[in-house]
Length: 318
Image 1 (cartoon, helix red, strand yellow):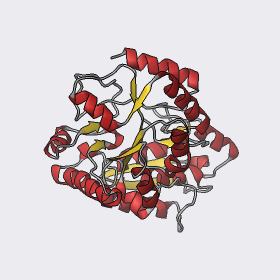
Image 2: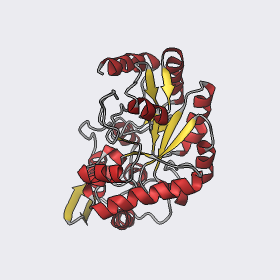
Image 3: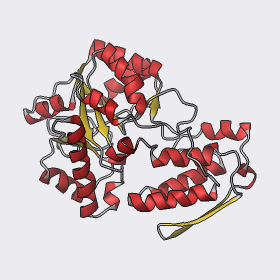
């Protein structure tokens, strides 16, 4: 499971792999493994014929670097991949809310010394003290922080607390709360520092490419288990319809945002007769795996040698 192929200074969720390390991984995969699409994986599952040297590459969220950086490298090594796309941000060509929040808390040179806001019925208060002013030392310190480590600064702690409060909200409410946070930070114009998703035109190019497949990732990337049946169904079904409209082909697989789901989610997947659904639980796919709840391993920014060692470990775990 990949998210971004990019060389960035700060990556609290460890979502980015540098192009150099990604290419090292592709070199290994091309030499020693059979890289297959999700459709091929589903076919192997249906026939109970999972081969031990098969590997699937998936990308969540549809960041623009998937198109500009990952795509040429995947073509170079003839490696197929599946891209799970949340449709709302691509249509709007707007940054994801978590990237907007990160830019506010970590990039703003001056923030109020105190944050106090009611989010989802809960009072969230935090004092930034001297960290209200951004310094070079503070930047270096907060750039080192990786979740789930303990936050290294007050800004890191505030970011994580707000992120946890916003994550379960329905998107319209999340937008309202994020707007309040921007007001608190005195942000009047959209920042240009956040990474953007690819455009719908770029998605169509990927969709028509023989190496690549497109899958669902809901409309607005919600934590599905936090929402009732009606919202979950709408998020999945509208995403499916939108992607099928733009890609002009059936879209029949899904990756759950954050890997988050419950029995309601799995019932919807079954009722819609989707071919496969992926979570973020770290488990290899075997002939006995449930197609509606398949595991994946997140790839961090590892050098080729470490990636190879972990890949063989994951395969032996079958």
